[in-house]
Length: 189
Image: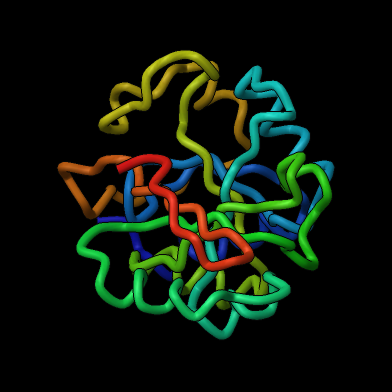
């Protein structure tokens, strides 16, 4: 069994150098980087062959960090997150302190408060959100397990975290958009 502490240090070093990682999240395998590093985000767009107008999400460790990266977290968001049975990403208006190229054209950003212990520790140690996007080339299906990840992705990242995905029946998170007027719209169940 790989040592989680060693993996944490190696992953952190890669992120701090502006590298991109392949890592197990609380949902599926993800490609990630420091969400404040525009060059690293560009590397992910390039690797995924994804058009930049298609935004990616980022992960934060807790509510306190969430509040630092969104101008105003609507009250309803806390209720949704508190009662959500599965990993839930919320699209917020007016994100702050992240790289411009991760913010959608309508000035929104999907952010998920992670439940995965490894991701939580990694984000807390980095002290910044990390990008999370599925580990596939744009237009191909999301890999359900490590074996399904394309070699182009494996070879294109700077570091592959050597830890298993904890959630074996992993599916992408639910995505909910909360408007400035607190209207709630489900984007992906």
